[in-house]
Length: 229
Image (tube, rainbow, N blue to C red; front, top):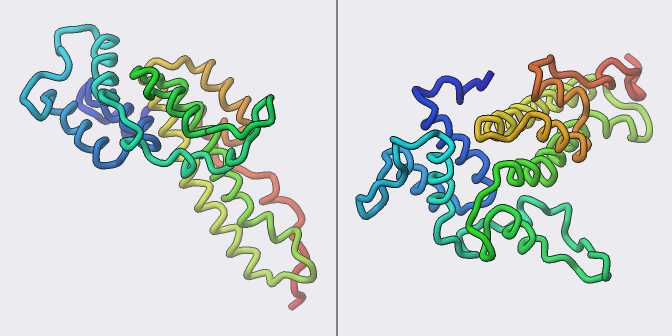
């Protein structure tokens, strides 16, 4: 079920990769890479053991995630607006602009807490990154339906091809996030609820969760106006 994650030699290795997947959009790449190396060799820069191999896997995961986010500082987190641009300028109930970066940092492990929540991390990635990328992939083709005048048939087929390629790439990313969250203990029911709240297309949920074929109804819909041969 876990594709690349399933091929890992042991559960600890898969868990470390999953933590990296869910932390990737938030942590500075340099910090993340070094911390993942430390986790894989189970040794920090001073030579101390990072996680106890004798503990149950749940406790190992806690030690791993704590180390990954240990010593959090604002500069170690990527600009939240790169991940959640769609929320720029959002107003709260009092009409004041929400500092989305602060909210995100607080949600996934910031100055007020150094804990890491795989569920919250997955929720934010689906809501602010995956959803937008899936829509952009679809629009490569569907935007042609709103163009005025005739459209070259070759341009239509090329747009559909590019749209499918982009959709495949972003769905695979979504599946990776889903699988990482599952491995880190997030219940499938919670992830399904997250995708429902995020309004992920039902066909995409089928691909992400149940390995169903990638599909879009508009691929079989009447095509936009075409240039006659």
